[in-house]
Length: 104
Image (cartoon, rainbow, N blue to C red; front, side):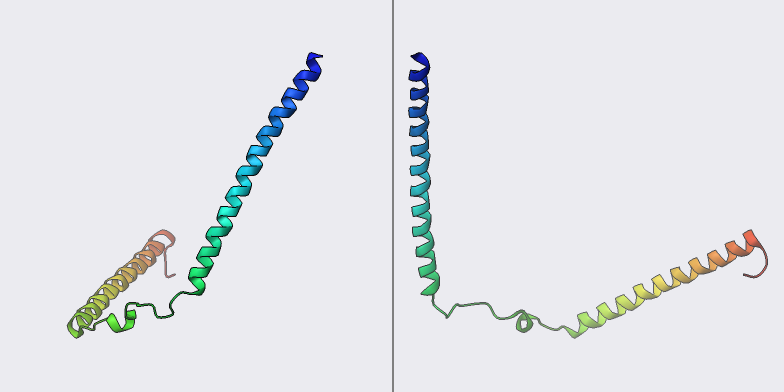
């Protein structure tokens, strides 16, 4: 008899838990539907005139002196890297001549 009573009590408890979760999911789903409906209404009825900042191309100011300085700096840095590369090539050639002898 206790087996049957225990099984019935367990089924009753599980039924209550299932009903509680089912009700919770149902109410949250209804709330989400209502929220989504409100948001879609706001999007559909939104104003098409939205104030926005001017485009970046109009906000850029050109400074000729700064541009000149930057271009000269870039030329100098490029020259330094070119010189370093040429020195490295010469060092490699000299190393090959010393190690392997003769003209490479």
